[in-house]
Image 1 (tube, rainbow, N blue to C red):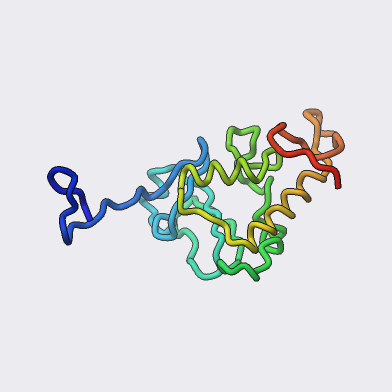
Image 2 (cartoon, rainbow, N blue to C red):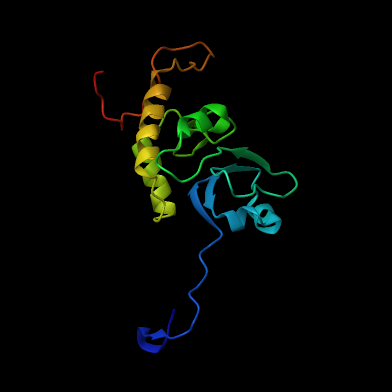
Length: 167
């Protein structure tokens, strides 16, 4: 419903359409399958990579737009980690913390989730995915991170926002 005079809703009036993309960071947007299927919207937003976390939704059909698919259903029993390991993980062409996005190996899952929810409040990983994302975060943070010279520098990088816990 659309607000009428004096803030009253007009029966039968259509609600305004949500924007096709929600900006999470300077080079990171969230959007619907409908938006990803629109070559005009993708071109207008300058999208060059579409991350499709779905087994069923078609990928982008726009020239110059690559697709990175994590083939899972929105089901807590799905193995999200297999999808992430096969190409949906940090460092696979996704924006990283060094490039100004809030999500990458150097940032916490909590900060990434806050950024996503700020852009798209209805976003909520199911309980099974949340548990697996926490495992994935721990794995990423335990990997040696390259130093600015390209040499491994030991434990995964941290921003100081993550809770420090001993195993």
